[in-house]
Image (cartoon, rainbow, N blue to C red):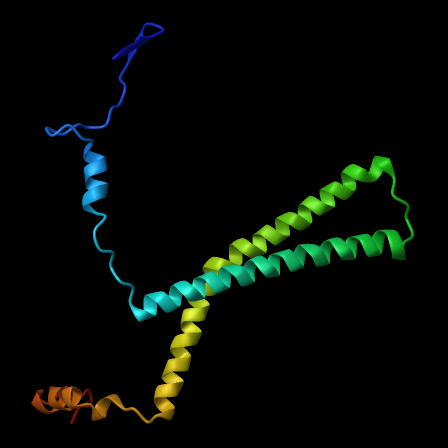
Length: 161
């Protein structure tokens, strides 16, 4: 315990084991064994997430460049305004807004793009399965389940006889 300004502060230390090593260090060494292999789907989704991230970065950069060029061309070429030193803070303020818009595009693209890509890939796989004429009712396990199950109970009629 350390004493500071009349108050006692406790200092946190890593736990030591009886063998003399840090517990955290031993856990890291123990967990450093063979890594789990990713499934094919996990690998493809990881690759897709990286591609979406790169595409989002490119699109945000393109957005910022287009906004800056539009502002410069509109202000200085079309309207013919000269660059004035007293207007520099206003120009910088516009450019900061354009940068914020680009960051927003990037931030929205990554988390919204992955579920969209997964949905599209699932829809594509269903379409491929449908074109291959794969029917789940033809599968032996489904047929066995249908044949072994009892018929559904009948509901009493709502109409009075």
